Length: 250
Image (cartoon, rainbow, N blue to C red; front, side, top):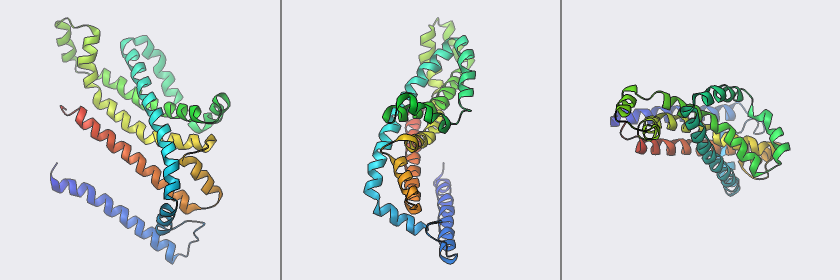
C-alpha cells in the first residue's frame, strides 16, 4: 500500500468524523437544545475530563472481566472446533445448536444467569464467553474446512498422522479465519461486559453508565460511550497487529 493510499484511508474518515462533530456542536448551540436532552461535544469532553479518574477505575474492572472471558472463550472455542473438525458427528450435532443459541438475545438470558450464579464476576464472565465463543468457533471450523486439498493429499502420501496433518497444515491455514473471528468477537467483548454490568454488576463502566443515566447526566453517559469505543478499537488494532505478525507468510 502506497503512502498516498494510506493517507487517504486515514484522512477521509477523520475528516468526515470532524465534520459530523462540528455539525453536532452547531445544531446544539443554534438549535438551543437542552443539555439534558442532548449534550454538545464540548460538554461531553468536559464530563470526560472531570470524571476521568472515576471512568478509569470502572474501565479497569470491565477490562479485567473482558480479557478473562475473552481468553476462556478462545480456549474453549479451540477445543470445540478441533473436536468438530476431528469427529464429523460432533460437528453435525453441535453446529445447529451453536447457530440457534445466537438467536437468543443475551440481555434476555442475563437475569437467568444471575439467578443461577448470582451477582458478580462469574455471571459477567459467563456472558462474555457466550458472546465471544460463537464467532471464534465458527471461523476456526470454516478455516479447517477450507484447507487446500492438494496440501492434505501431499501429507497423506508422506504418511503423516492426523495430528501432524492438523498441526502442520490445517492449523496454519486456518489462522486467517481465526483472527477474523477474534476481531468480530473483540467488538462484542466489551459490549457483553457492559450488558452484564447493567444487569447485576457492582463495578465497571456499565455500572457507571447506569448511575449517570439515572442522574440524567447524559454528558457522562456519552463520555462512558467514548471509553467503550476507544477500548474496543484498541483491541481490534491489537489483534490485527498480532495477526500480521503471525500470518506474515500470507
